[in-house]
Image (cartoon, each protein chain N blue to C red):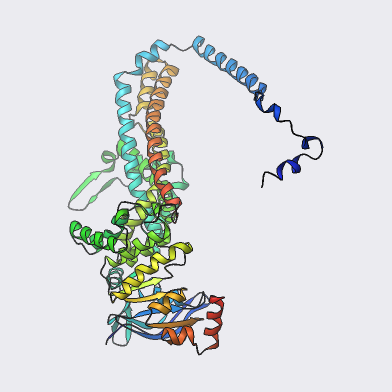
Length: 302
Length: 254
């Protein structure tokens, strides 16, 4: 729109006359009284909550005392180890089943579809209990002649939790990986084929590295989610941080104090991971920025 | 001279669409052949069948004396395995309309990827060759640039270098300038002309009739999945015999 037509289109009559002398006047921004009132009310409510917690039946000295108790710290270690192991298993299975689900072989595809359907379709808690009680179905496992063991001995709380969390996670990660692979332009695969790559090499060298940009952010979220999911394993007696807090409060009846201790530790781990995720996402956002303008004629011609 | 590509009664349908309707042709080695025709005429499909990005429904294609995609045992043709097809594709290099450079690799990495990963050649030796190729397409300074940092014309020139790095006997170009801004077409055509002069066998699907007239030894006009007219650029583009060819050329030049 040209500047000569603008005034006449706005002002018919009274603003058609200009007064250039007001150009030096100070501009005063609009006042947002509503925001000030809302903020004051919320702060007041927050202060009341803090006050009631401070005066409530919470012995903060006990919280401080148990925050670094040996049992809590070892539980914390188990929580972190389980998060890492279960995520590793989940990502491995996720990539594997994402590839299977896109396989042209109907049997492999069927198996992958069943896996995702079953493990996304049943509650995680139920799956944990199934793994933990597997000995009721199969008392012994092994390869005849090579080794044999009682399932009760093999299926420790650690193993049952690892299988439960990892296999369940794999079903979700498979979907994330699949959408990541689908996000890579089909032309990339064609170009890879054209230089003589087989299907597997194409996947490994061309498709997966580009799919990572889409895969990494949601997987980061799932790591954070996994940290908290490990607490579910307390029901089958895996000695993670919540379970150990419970053991302590069964003995000393300081229920809320020990729950606060565990909550504090979960928050600390998740905060650290969130910071890590922020940097990871920024790194991969830079990558996707590269991809979002594939044919940009921005660069200077040489 | 032995033809480098032979097609015999090639047919291909996509759903209910007859993309190729019995195409037969021979292309001698060392020749530059341009395929022109309206969109949907099957010219890109023919190119994609030659390097097996599409499977043909019936007929046969030979590239460099080898039956493409199948092994003949008795009177049956058995489909080849994934890795056998991959090996056959090494005979030809392909340049795409949308460049299809690997987005997560620099220009240099794009070029050395095939020789290093597929042909298992030594990286430093391949890198030296890649630098020569980049020099040839005029992009030595862009060796470390990612595709998104390059213009369309630059990306297409890197894509040509990437295909050449595999040392193909035959280069296939699928509308290499159609996705380019008009002012970038010339630089890509210049690289292709240089390649033609060096004696490379080229099959070029293109709308650039000027390029076809100047560089092609032969021009094929296709329409509705079939070859309508074939001959020297002069014959097909200047004095076409068929009405459909005349209509197409009139429409393109209009």
